[in-house]
Image 1: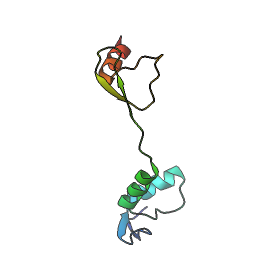
Image 2: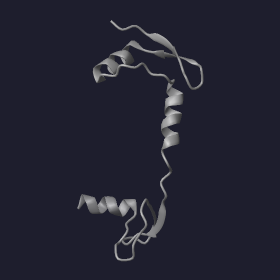
Image 3: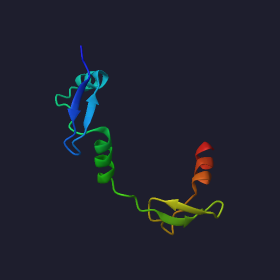
Image 4: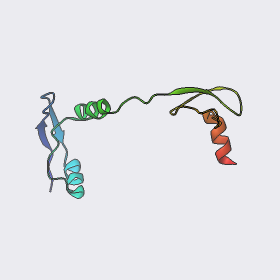
Length: 91
């Protein structure tokens, strides 16, 4: 049986609990090492490695509203706002 363990975060030095449920999950996944960072330091580490997506502004080919898209629009291809795109997918 697993029991809760108190560990020390290697980033911030604070104590955190490695619960019995988390230990069981780690064992099921085959992980052999205990976590070395608390949840907030793990989350901060994940978000720091993600870069912000560059968004481009375009005019919707269907309704004419301004749309923000994660790709550079080309003149030869129509761009749709999220509402019009969703309507087209339903049809």
